[in-house]
Length: 133
Length: 88
Image (cartoon, rainbow over all chains, first blue to last red; front, side, top):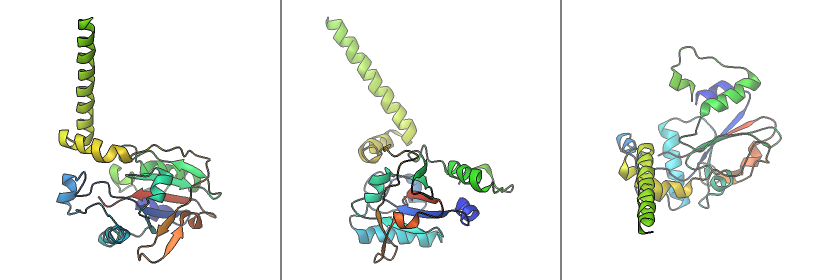
């Protein structure tokens, strides 16, 4: 979110909602119960849209948003599940390919790419973990 | 000869136990390791895309469910940061 605010005047952002990672009927995490984020894996587009809308409303999510279809076309094209980051350059080429989340999901690498091109945006008041996102 | 098979079995068994322990640590517990194998690993793919490749296109739905657009429509002019993820 911070990266979006820092670089939105230089780059476009698009969040793509893909199939759930930890739904109640698959591998549910305790943290999801604690945070009251409990959803079954969507079986139709209507369910998927409902969860996506819950997400954007709950967090007042400002980043442009798209929802993958039920064939998971975007997910398959980008090997995106459960979470992944890419940067596409002005010519439509992959400029940055992040690793598979969650272990290799590193927003700091996206920030570094943008900073190398448009200059660093410093947040001295931010904690280390916040800088990563 | 019988001893060789026995030690091969012991070795394989040890490897399996070690793999399960590592998965348990990664996933957060033995139960999570089983769920990880059952539900996560089949969907995790490294993929073949690499920097310099043409970015694939895909149709996406807007939050209202009625409108659609293509990733390609959002490219050109400026870099596009794609953030894939879900709620849970």
